[in-house]
Length: 172
Image (cartoon, rainbow, N blue to C red):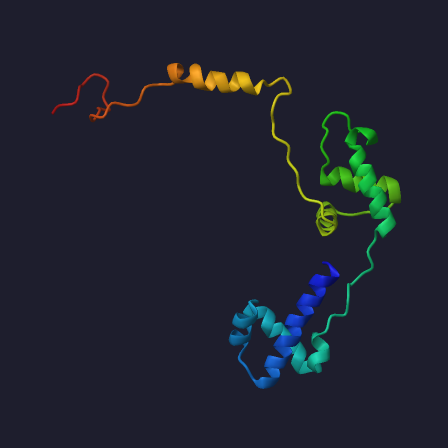
């Protein structure tokens, strides 16, 4: 979570605290602040125990395992591609491969889910390539669809009712 997101969430919690002081109902606070009722109940319990200070953020629970310099190096290595790191068969980065790369480079362990969070937090997203043959000729495909496909495709079904029996015709 970015510092801006943390600040925005803390502002919402502080607004909830001010509403608790005025005696507003949990459902009303949840609806106005667009958060879940259960979350507002947790905030109210914390507010009752410690006042507005209990609603303030205590910051991240743990220091980040990869420093800014290490993440910058990781990005450089990712841009070099999987082949540069020994994955010759498939030229795609997977979370498992990135976790292995981080272990090789920095001796820091992550789970694939943790790596996904780290990458998303730093602006990376999932990219899945289209499965297309490298020899594919788009012009030839377009010509085939336009000229050959109309002759090959099956004709439409007749508009009159059919019979489920192959030997008996429809009466009517």
